[in-house]
Image (cartoon, rainbow, N blue to C red; front, side, top):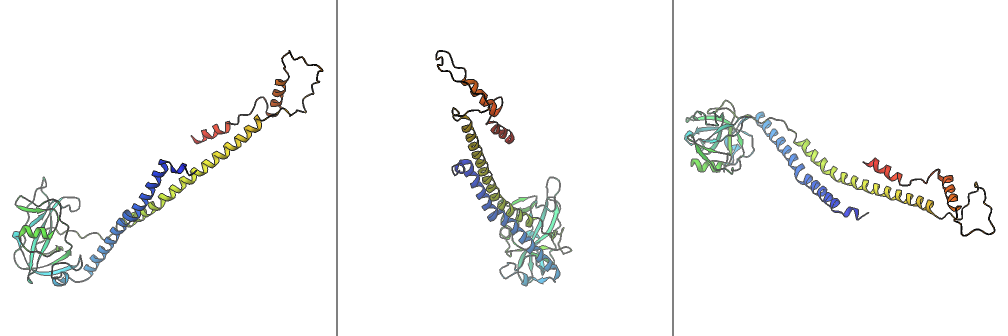
Length: 316
């Protein structure tokens, strides 16, 4: 029986099941459950931000320009630097491609932060539409603190009079506009000076990541159980086949065994001759054997392999 499960097919199946279960428990399930935790934390921060008043910019950002808590609403006074505007290129808003305006904002305290003023839809052929300049006068704005994005693999490009980037990476943008910027940036809330079309706040729903995580855990448990069921079915089928073969072999041995000493009491006895003729062919043995066969099993011997053929038809 052990040799059966050492065949390449069974060994490869076992390796696949082990690898699949390990991958689901260590990568796929944590990935979905981690995304659910991130969404729950984000929703909590957004709710907390709107339940409280905007905080001064010095309390939201540390001295090195790193935010203390994302999605916190901040209030700051200063002025835009409209000549250093950079566009975030073709970042979808909803289901449509759009350009987002990124402009440095210098506060009265001397800190300069990058502000996302919002978005404008693209013109025909994904061309840059007309974008109103940010006001250069001193204003007070409210915005939400956002974490700096990783730098995109595509290099910045200059088209239609605008420097365009593929991610909001403040270090890269600072080099392009030659202005020192804080590490993280701000996103304008609606109805603020310099706003274009305010970016929507993420929906406060959790999505399906939690259920997806539980599904991967269930798949990781079901795979070994399915393999164990296949092994049990194979063992059961082989045991049943061996029992049937043994029964058929015993029955065949009983039928084909010696019967010369057996006598059939239902047959009349044949008187023995004193001197049998040895030259004449004997015709008594065959009819006697035939009569014994018919007496026990009918007109012919039973077919002991019929059961095996029937079982084969049941399988297919």
